[in-house]
Image 1: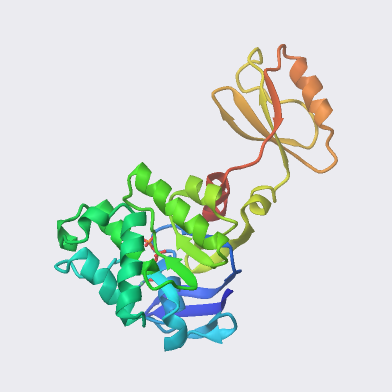
Image 2 (image 1 turned 90 degrees about the vertical axis):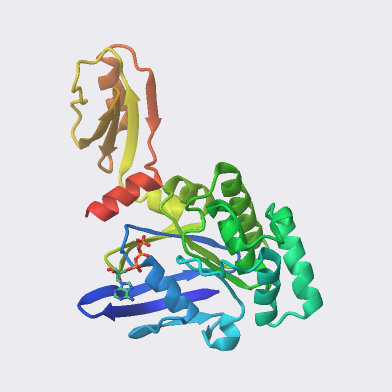
Length: 295
Ligand SMILES: Nc1ncnc2c1ncn2[C@@H]1O[C@H](COP(=O)(O)OP(=O)(O)OP(=O)(O)O)[C@@H](O)[C@H]1O
């Protein structure tokens, strides 16, 4: 289990992190989202111990992140940082050796991961000769080649083609299923919503929402979605305790205060003519994100 507890970090005048806390259990996929400059990379660097926090703590299975613990983390840094002129295969073997694997195990891990990630025909190439997406696949291989116990990935999906997104998704799911805590940052909210058990939304260095995706999405009041094509433009049911949330292409989203009878809303809708849609509405992670970031 990975636990980040009340971590703060200041760079000069900028308070980059202000008491950030979250935890990722074994087998959980945690999505870390927030605008540019919100503090995701800084948090991940502190988890890795490549940057020191001003206060707070990071533990993995209860231990602070010392050198031995750090060896067990698979990390994909935002700045990527592999050697451009080194051949892909040699580089992965070298990284696995640095993490303590024997020459034989390092070679077989390199072979396994390059094959799995569709890079077997790129082993002899210099990294710099690969397309950016393929370099990213090598980065993932580099994070996995030493068989880590925790994965921390900074925007692993950025710049990937749809097939590579599927491969990355599959590998992350598989690693979580094997019991690893996996944390990754991303701006692709649909993907985070699909993939993650829990999410954290960070804004200006502070965690504004943390929890299971489904729980966060359903934390507001009860919402209904209606499509009443015969209603006049701008129609909203005249039922007390009902607020208009949005209207898009004739589909109206309403929020109901506790105790409001949804059948009263349905009757009001039927009063306008046909009702083509009357359903519960669950906001997407993107809706929730906009609400949290705008607040
Ligand atoms: N080494 C540094 N020196 C000074 N300020 C820094 C440094 N690293 C980060 N910052 C500042 O800390 C804040 C958080 O930056 P961070 O890179 O963690 O954001 P992020 O959420 O990863 O953003 P992005 O989505 O753009 O990658 C920003 O205001 C950034 O300018």
